[in-house]
Length: 126
Image 1 (spheres, rainbow, N blue to C red):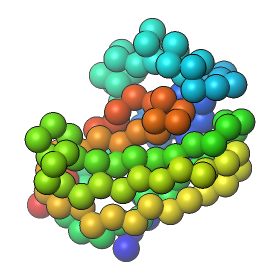
Image 2: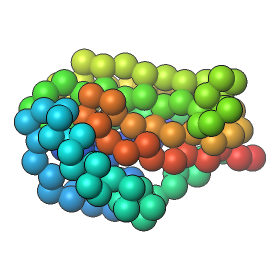
Image 3: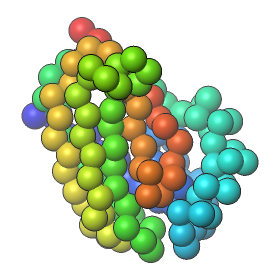
């Protein structure tokens, strides 16, 4: 299956926001505060990932965050009940983890609850 590579730095996914914003974080609480201030504005400008239905591997890297990260991809809105999801933790600094999923048409969001990133958008359509 195709591999979608995503890089996490403090409080964000680099590819989703078109670059590293240079945030510094020693804990989830730091990202909570940063995203409370800027998350909505950044999300409005973030790239919406568009894919066709099918099997994918989301390869997520913890580039330089000094605490454990994870990844959570799930349906958005009503789709949260019906669309497939994948999640996992244990992603330590410098490590990479793969998250396989078979995407169905619909609207999704992805984020890292442990790094408190915004809920980035993913649209799957034929």
